[in-house]
View 1 (cartoon, rainbow, N blue to C red):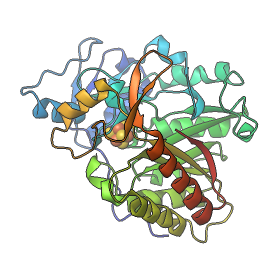
View 2 (view 1 turned 180 degrees about the vertical axis):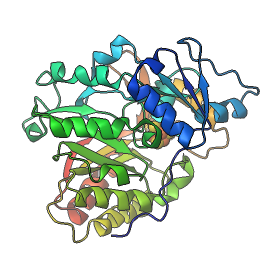
View 3 (view 1 turned 135 degrees about the horizontal axis):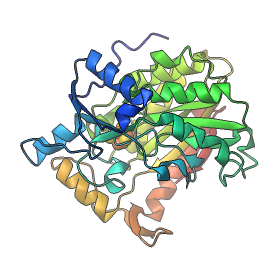
Length: 357
Ligand code: SF4
């Protein structure tokens, strides 16, 4: 399996670091790595992140996306939230992502300009993990997933691999899970491919790396991410390095030609894993959905996007928080689900499908 020709590495244009974040060795290491990459470093006088740049609209969006703020995560980040159906707990290393996906779920979750904020107090966040082991209600309570132990998901509010060249936080967390004897596993998913620094870590099979995939047909919706072919090579290299791996098919989009597109993608996954031995492969299937809020934000960020967010083939689903989201209607959902379960069963018979949503 060849190495990716040139895995795309994100280099922020500017790094802002707060006064408090400079008090942590991990925060200072991020600043030093970014400076070595040629990033402009701005040492903020206080702890408020301010981005005072000219321009608005598209310019403001682009400036924010090229900015990494190194901050101290508030104490609430050390009281983890459940994150069903993926994992027992959400562990956040950062918030925000430098890529430009026109369906990004973060648009509905985060407010303000899309600056990525990376946490300097990683040690404090990691110190909270043992308190949560054995306490979860997803894998901890599931017979089918009991082998995973208590699970911690690192990709809820960021793509941790995207920002890894500057943060180093993912490698640190993988090493921590590799070192602990707690019955726990780390999980992350990514649309990036720069896995080289992770391959030699002493992970002890306690981190599951998943690649977040959509067919090349939808590449125009995933600006700034690694090519799908490179993500598949990255997944194979991680499997060869002994990591449990997975596919996050997300978001599944029922646009014209979806059967051929996803059929081709699943065939590409099978080809990428051809000849690999002892692969532990899971699949998570997540259909496209949006809220009125995320649609408005994404519409302002990507006004020219062809991504369909009309009421066609949609139905409203109420959430337990009293809000609502637009999901595919029953007929479309059934057709998608049947196709994915059948095709994965046929092309990737050893894969375990964890959930459909
Ligand atoms: Fe959002 Fe993931 Fe795309 Fe980043 S890679 S912009 S987190 S969908």
